[in-house]
Picture 1 (cartoon, one colour):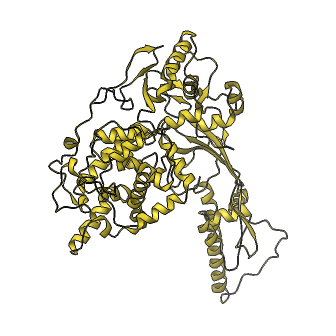
Picture 2 (cartoon, rainbow, N blue to C red; picture 1 turned 180 degrees about the vertical axis):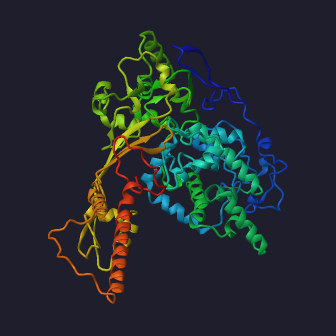
Length: 588
């Protein structure tokens, strides 16, 4: 086993150096014998060795003739890389020595080689970023007896960028989607996203790769296809080919274009690394020793302060600690930080000095916005920019934040630094104002069709626009009145309306019409006395009176229908009135 670096003293009660595989092995550690390292195990013979010779017996390693193709001299892929006979000079040599996958017989490999070689600047940026993480990845791969081609997989997945985020919300070096990340214990919350944690995500990725390698009969090409396409999709494609009597290897399966190009990209990078000198690729210097060590902390610390202690810029610090989402690192969320191996002594000394000066390590603390306070004044008082304060709390520019909002903010005086550990996330009250919405009536449109389109009622359209009947084409109608809502976004990210005010007109004319319908119409002139109708004329008068009564009743019902939506469906909200429960499809 690789010996671990440990620091016993707790400086200022803040930090300890944790056991970590990123510490270089001692010089006295003897390498495993080559014959023993490459010896196959019971389940090692698999379909992934189809590209290597399976009929000729393996010759002893000492008698193996020199080959022009470096891959051809490797043993059949067993998932366990051969160990070097002597210590290697740099990490690139160590990676090359661990290659154990067979060549992939596909024209796409050469095509992807040309793609990378035509973009030397892109290659250099990827390799330079990888210099921080490759030693740890190779260490973990070799511990598990896996081929070191897998150390190149983050170049394909994320261009070795730990903060890469895909359109499918896959994140980190190994591009875990949220659900798979949670399945492999990669915590994702407001504080951290451990899919971006270099150590934790590498451990999870290798666990997953081992699982799907075994699932597909120890075939690395099918395992890699599953990593990209999904284990279920590859398993179904294999079963379909088998049911049709067709080969079920990687090259024979129907698959999406992205997956078809996925393994060739990895093989192209492998070939470029094997022939870097011949191709004129200047690989960055990569010593065979750890780039970073992992520190365990026992109390919160500001991210910017931690970077300052290590003599790093914030960007450099985040490159090694991309899992932390906030400007303060809470010990209860992710108690690890990574530092360059050559900065650990300076960091610990700075921590000790800071503690002896009795200064706060975590100045970002929960703060509830008081009446009269604004984000601008809060940022100015805390010595940060408004953009920094917004970013720390996931607030958008232009939001009208109200008193009562609880956020993280820097404080000049901190009495209890551990308060930040109990902060679950911002609780934000904001005022959202919406102007009135208008619609110009088109030919053949009716109030009913317009009401359905804007999720309202005909009665509302008539009331808001003072209409007695329909609206002719060209009429500009108000279809939604102006409103102001107070929205609450909770710590869990749920949003709900806690107060709503609209400028809907008070529909008093409908009420007046209803009241007038109950009263007799006033007479302007006294009607002259009429003679009693004759017996023959009486039935006609009776019929006329009945018709008038029916018409009056119909008018009363119409008025009542016009008023009812005002009282129930879209009630005017007044200060003390109890609001009806909102409709499930109501827009907010």
